[in-house]
Image (cartoon, rainbow, N blue to C red; front, side, top):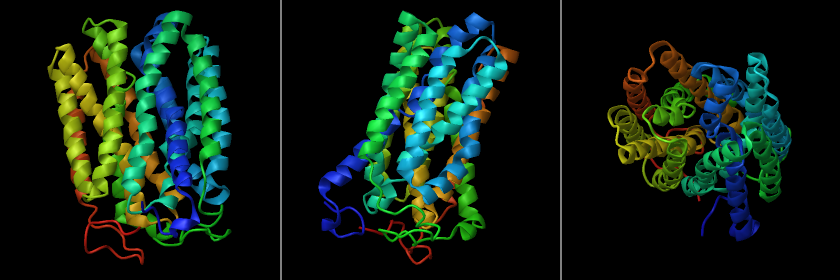
Length: 422
């Protein structure tokens, strides 16, 4: 089995397996499944206890994503400078503690928003931004497959965590649920960090360390900042995440509004995770064989169809199909951010550029939930936003097609839309 550019003897097969498994485990217990995916489960009990509207209750989700979006470029730069594992380990400890401290809420909106922002700031490195930054150091031609397998951890977490949170909230209350989730995240994240390995010495990207792999290949940070492609990628994920992640904290409420039980409503969030899990694997396989922008377009169209069905149908099974399609799109988004940055800019400033691209994903997830909640509180319906969101996904697909061909190792666009490597 071929991996990356180093000779096969440079690292054993189990090292590659451990890196993928560590990334998968870390993302299972990281920010997206533990905090994002469970946000909808906590909205109703907190809104009931403190007398909040849905837009107020969903401010936690938005504040955390805002914290993540703002800090992502800095986290990427820190990973380049200090090493990925160190940044993840420190972040995971604070993220888990901050999640547990969400149990201290007393109805103060300042505490609700502020602590949620802390969760997002320190959760950034426990998301795909941290764990997927390791894989391009080890994989090249099979990078898509490696990303897809690792992202199964995030998909599995998105299936399991909402159900676990609902069980804890129903059986023990929302405060206990936050504490258990936070402590569990710390334990699993430390195991994940123990499994991860880095191929490039900290500081290599900036010239301050020694590279174990050809990390200098690609576009410099300054060149990338002047590139249309970087900001097009950023805009793609602003649009895509606004359209899909906006539904996260509102999906259980949408189902409950139509008369379904809390368990059925929670299952809708889990079905997003099922689609997300399938989307990770499918996207990973496809982008190793087909030009990634083409793959992105297909998934964005599928997500647009899912949102349309969510608006138009009242049949429970069809609604679950709709949420699965949305999950497929979210799954594709996660794989594509890392892959597009690697393919168009190389590894020379990968962490910092990945952080910038990922911040677009975060900002979109701030805009969407707040806008959706505010619209519902004012109009009592999600109908108009559910018409706009599919159009945003279609626009993201068109913008992705404008990226063109991948980067050659020497810094030129490839003649064939296929990533170079081993």
